[in-house]
Image 1 (cartoon, rainbow, N blue to C red):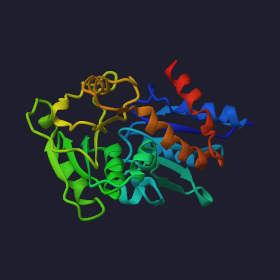
Image 2: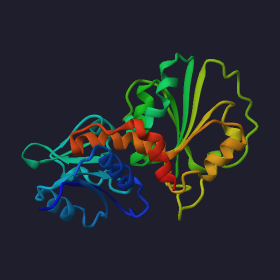
Image 3: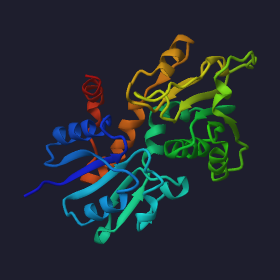
Image 4: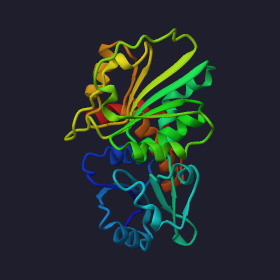
Amino acid sequence: MSMPFAEVIGDPIAQSKSPAIHRFWLEKLGIEADYRATRVTEDNLADYLAERQADPNWRGCNVTMPLKQAVQPYLASMEDPAASIGAVNTIYPAFDRVLAGTNTDAAGFLEPLTQRLRDTHLFRMARIIGAGGAARAIAHALAAQGFTLVLAARRTEQAEELIAQLPGTTEHHVVLLDHFAAPTDFAFDDRQGLLDLVVNASPLGMRGKDELAFDWSHAPPGAIAYDIVTDPLDTAFLQAARAAGHPTIDGLAMLIGQAAEAFRLFYGAPPPREHDAELRERLGA
């Protein structure tokens, strides 16, 4: 008899660390199940979902680039926050095995910022590189936390559309991707009581992709560099941030955080987060 399984889908997918994360937790909990990586393109997405929906052993899938918006027409329902974000990163068979979509990216992204977000700030600013599916989740999460956002994208119309859907009445801004590439002599004011982030929410810097051109003169002292790329884990973006004196958060923080929410849906149990340090060691091996 085949065992229950979940998986991650996207294109490309071979570099995904999600199978290692979920299998680590399954092993620790002694759950007889599997988690796989399956290459799925937009062209074969409909066939893939129909086949999996009919498989009683399939517990669901995580969705990565470039499918986070493409999957939506095939879902019977979209739960919040996926509905408000407009991007799905987790699909699971709900009652009668109809396909339901949700989004765990937002919660996963905020997890390593939890302590800082408990503090009160005079002002919160985030510069976000990218306007795709992951950026949508991140922008919504940060807007809900009272951040003023500057979105940098190759296609400004995509970023404008994203901003128009954000919650609240804060005025956000859009710039071209190369706005942050060249040095600036802008004089930042006193950073006391402020919280600043610079987030790479794009594939730039990923193995096989172009590097992200970001000059750290655009970031105020103390700004946190957060890169969601996981291959390589220590990106040139993060290395340059540390060299300029900025604290950093790597892509495993968000990846593990969002995977934890999905794991509960797929396998009906919370993952053993007390082993996070060991998991990071395994992923870095």
